[in-house]
Image 1 (cartoon, rainbow, N blue to C red):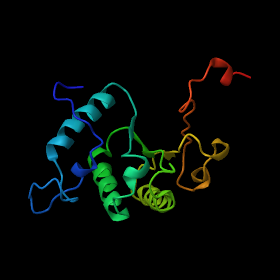
Image 2 (spheres, helix red, strand yellow):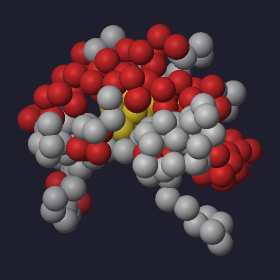
Image 3 (cartoon, rainbow, N blue to C red):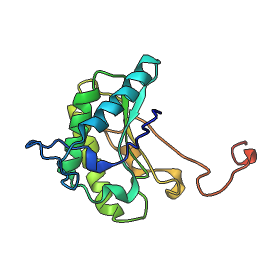
Amino acid sequence: MHDDETSFDDSSKVFDKTDNVADPADPSYTDIEYWQLYDQYIAYAANSGLVINLGVAGTSLLDAPTLDELKRIFRYMQARYGAYPIIWLITQEYNSPTGSPSARKTKVYDLCSYLKSIDPYDRALGLHQYPESPDHADDSWNEAWNDMTVDQNGHFHTPDAGDYLY
């Protein structure tokens, strides 16, 4: 991280403002300095031979933005970082029981279908499900746009090695 360490999970900074009015409360506002700093992280990772995993937010943080707003940010990220070695992990714990999980699931699935349709390189795309999903499975695994399974174990307890050995 840089001395001016910046968090990249502030969704108020991801949209482009066409009239150049710098109003962070406006959901269409973009803090270009945010993206310019993020560019450095992306370039560093790519130059180091790493594949970059891109996504935004998680859990109920995805309840507030509309589908159109989410499409806009992912279209922007696709345009800005499409030349880099990336995969799409759209979000984390998208099916968390917090907030509005049913509406969020529909919105996130629609976003995944959209992103798959605009990615000219057909890169791997998937979701990080909530760790206590029933049977550690997820409905998204059956979706045509889903290319990978992301699982997280040991989230709510401290496992010992025996939990993972047969």
